[in-house]
Image 1 (cartoon, rainbow, N blue to C red):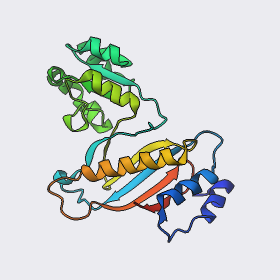
Image 2 (image 1 turned 45 degrees about the vertical axis):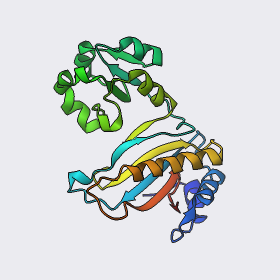
Image 3 (image 1 turned 90 degrees about the vertical axis):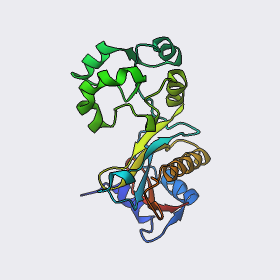
Image 4 (image 1 turned 135 degrees about the horizontal axis):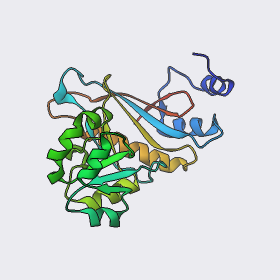
Length: 223
């Protein structure tokens, strides 16, 4: 894959054999900004799980002290907590009629539901599941605490899970964020991934961490 001049120039300043400190990596990324837009900062975590064993799956939620700079459209499906969802600032609120719409089009980034709606959501499970949108107690998106959940999502709480290669990916902020804020967000995310280690998994969960901007090269870090 042919890379642009700015990418190659940024890559020349990174020692691919070196594992940088978090502070060093953030400084390198911010000093070698590639795009004209405000790039996102991404963290990619390589784990040691056996992807063939479903009981080793890494899945949970992370709270970002300074948000991620990305606004998510939140939908709530409920028959009992609509007023709470509206008060908390949910973008879309509905019941069975919203489920019917999901079968045709998805217009949200996060779906939260109250328990009584789960049997009805089974109709669209094959649509929501592959996209990681099915409400789940592990990601705190299946809950009676609608007001608190929507408020937390507004402040930057995000769900994560490993991909088919056993890796976990997450946007943790914007390149324009103060370096110390990015550092806190990254530390918080890595800590939450560590806490999500399944009880059936033995040994060290994380084998490598890489940070990068949307358009920039990856930098290996240690925490």
